[in-house]
Each structure stands twice: as C-alpha cells, then as structure tokens.
Amino acid sequence: MEAEVDKLELMFQKAESDLDYIQYRLEYEIKTNHPDSAGEKNPVTLLKELSAIKSRYQTLYALFKPVAAEQKETKSRICATVNKTMNVIQNLQKQTDLELSPLTDEEKTVADQLKSHMPDL
Image (cartoon, rainbow, N blue to C red; front, side, top):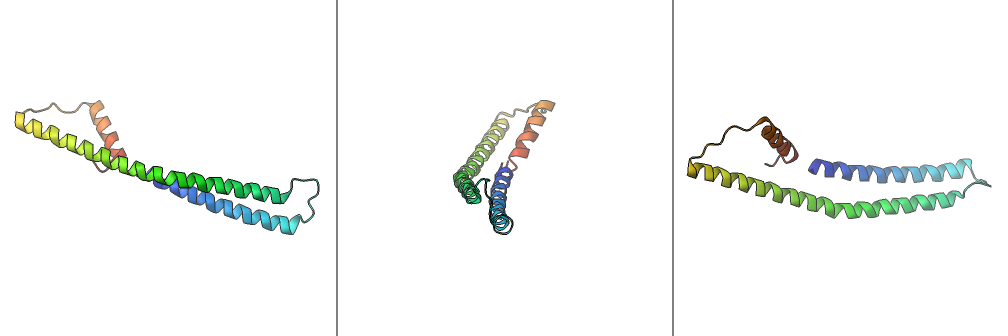
C-alpha cells in the first residue's frame, strides 16, 4: 500500500511538471508562431484554462497528502493488531498443548497475499 501511495505522489509531481512544461511551450508557440491568431480561440484564454487545471491539480494533491498519511497509520495499526493476535494464538496453543493441522493450500495462498500486502507482518 505504501508503494502505491509513493507511486501516486510521484505521478502528481510528474503531472505538475508536465503542466508547467506545456504552459511554457504554449506561451512560446503563441509568441513565435501565432502573433495574429484571428478567428481561433483566444490563446490567453487557453493559458488561463491551463492555469486553472494546474490549480485544481494542486488542490487535489493537497487533499491527497493527509489521506496518504492516514493510510500509512492505518496500515501500521492493522499490522500491530494482526501481530498481537498471532502472538495470542501462539500463546494459547502453547498453554493448551494444542497442535494445529498444517495450513490448507487456500490458507497458504491467503497468508502469502496478506504478507505481500503487509510486509511488516
């Protein structure tokens, strides 16, 4: 989950950089190639729209940051709870001299999936 959050963060940063570059290229193209663009949509309006999109992107990124932090914290709590539960089960097994049968293939698959999503376990 943490890797996915980092990947999203990098995607936001790249998108912001791409928007900056597009804005720069548009301004350059308008100045050099289209000084009198009559009959077409106003290039200044296009640039303002691009700025508005960039602003919305930055707002979305700002909203995303607390969610990412909360996801990390939630993941840590879940891992801690699972670890405590596993320790309690192991202690109960020792106290009762109970031996469990080996895991089924389905249980092994689920355990592997859980470990792959939460390597802290």
